[in-house]
Length: 255
Length: 334
Image 1 (cartoon, rainbow over the protein chains, first blue to last red):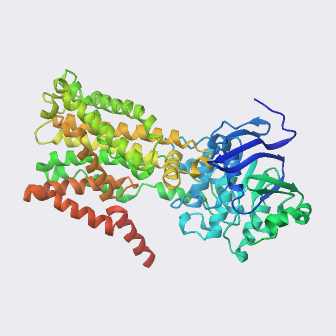
Image 2: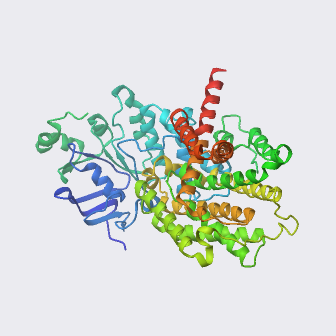
Image 3: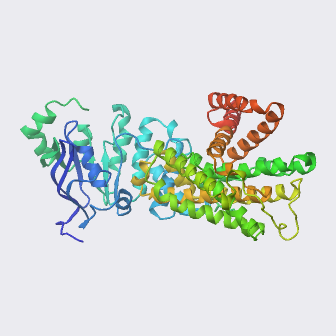
């Protein structure tokens, strides 16, 4: 079923979700044009991560639709959405502690290429997949440590690996859940560079508390409060919006 | 093993890193050659050696789901016993040809594994332990009640095997039994080694390491879990079939909870998730039981319990895991 999504690569229509009596998504209407760089901000508990969970299928909505490139994907499971190009990262590192970055990213590449179900061929013979994985690690400055177990990597490197795993899926739309979460200010440079370096073909929606990152990369900002979209606009509009200051920027203790 | 030759890259080749992991090591050759030693040095222990090889295959099959995929099962004997009864009944009712009988045992366990895999993928952790255990108990009682067919707790008697390949009779000393069991173990090992070192094997380790991330990289992990569960069941069935054929008898305890627990103990002792762990664990377990039970039959579980506690506390990754850690430390110092 195709629904006209007025040129948006990702859209939600009247998306609703309750956890018991708590409303975490209140008729969310979202529309991301191709190649967009949108930031999703809001105070803790506003439902930002839940929205990403809803869009990626990790949480089922109570009502509403999710459209990827005009197609209704509301009924697809998370892995199928990834196959269609809707990929996310996690706020809390969700990695493979005892796999090396090279193994982990090779696995993600093999999954995308539909080769990860093959059991009769040795992994080292998958030249293209391994080389692609290694290139991704190179761009994210992880190549030097690509054979160490992930659990031994520095925290900032693990944040980069989160992005590497997502890029390996060759996303059309990439949802970054606080890419810089927990990274000390003086180490966030590489991470900012990684986010800035994401190909402009990829549409990005990112949650972030770090206002420097938000105002540096976002062309548009969506503000969420208690499960609903309060407002959205350009960074300048948002910065001067009194309501936003009241609920969010005014208390700015999140960075 | 096929070796793909690397193109001449002057720079660093990431494939080398992965290739180093899957390379056949000389120690492995030594290990498998040593497996032939019982013929030379301990010809009176060939029956035991055969049972060790069978236990090793069983532990190897369990390692696929416990060690590599991070699932738990306390009812793996269901497949072992199902394979054993399949091979035993076939031979009892007129088809004593070993290889096809063994194949039938594997296929029977495969079918049982396939049918139960639908439940397995829906649950995890504690529920999985209970369901696998429940399945095993269920089969145990069915086999117990079906006295007319299985002999109940008297065991399945009257199993008559034809000579292996029409040549080698199953003798009392276990000469044929051990050779047969060892070859089946070795061939199974080669297949599973290849499987573990494949992209599929890597995706299993991904499930073990972080099942939550797998869908986020586009992996249909439920399918993978079902596949490996069925494969694991098949090899457990082969192990059971081997036992039935080489002993020409099936005891009801092939399906018992104890057998499920013992194979888990072997795997934990040897070290899960490293292929050889189950084999080494089976070797230690069976030899210890043989020796300790000779000294004092009632006391064997005391020593087993002690061994298990010591290994778990001091070598949480099993005996092989402990050896690997020692080796790594020694290399770093050198």
